[in-house]
Image (cartoon, rainbow, N blue to C red):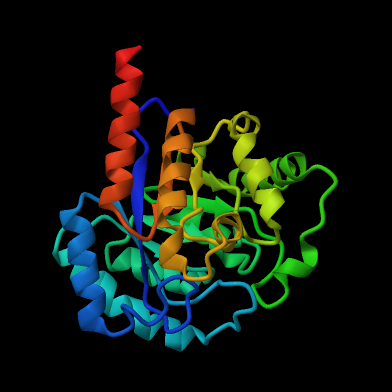
Length: 269
C-alpha cells in the first residue's frame, strides 16, 4: 500500500440534505468560508459535491448540480485549492476539469454514467476515484447482500478497473474506494475495514470514507452525526497505519493530527 502519509480529503457538500452537514455550506458564501478553513487546516484536496448520496436520497437534475458546484470550484481554485469534483455525471466532471478540478470522485465507479469512462480516458492528467457501488441512494440498501463482502467488493472493483483500463485509462490515474455505507450494513463496513490488506492486493491507492457515517452512530449510540467525530478520527488513525492513500473527512485538522501521530509512532520503531 501507500508508503507516504495518508492524505486528508475535506468534504464540502453544497447540498441541503447530506447526512452529516446538509445545509451548513449550501450558499456560496458559507461554502467558500468552509473551503478557506479547510485550506488553512491543511487539507490536501477539497471534494466539492452538489448531490447528496445519503441512503434514500432522490437525484437532483444536472442543471441544479451544475449551479451548486461550479461557482464554488472556480472560486476555490483561485484560492489555490486542489479540487475534487464529487459527481456521477460525466458532463459535470468535464466542466469541473475545465474549471480546474484535478480529481473526479465518482461514487458509482462509472456505472451511473457510461460516458464517465470516456472522460477519464480523455483527461490523462486527472485522478479518478472509483468507488464500489451497486445502485442509486434511493434503493441501494436493498442490495446490501453478500456471501463474502470483502471478496465481492474486491471483485466488483476489479471489474470497474478492467473496464477503465480496457477503454484506455492509465492505471496511474486510478484510486479505489470500497464504498462504506453504500449498499452495505454496519457489519459489512467493519469487515471491509478489518481486511483492507485484501483490497490492497488490487494494486491501487485506497481512499476511505468513514467520516461520521451511520455505522459509527450505531457503535457509539449517537444520532447526531457531529457526535461521531471521535470514532471517525479513530478510523483515520487505524487506516493510516495500514498505508491507505487517503481519508475523506468532514473535519480536517483533527484527522491531520491523528495521521501525524501515526507517522511519528512509525518512526519510533
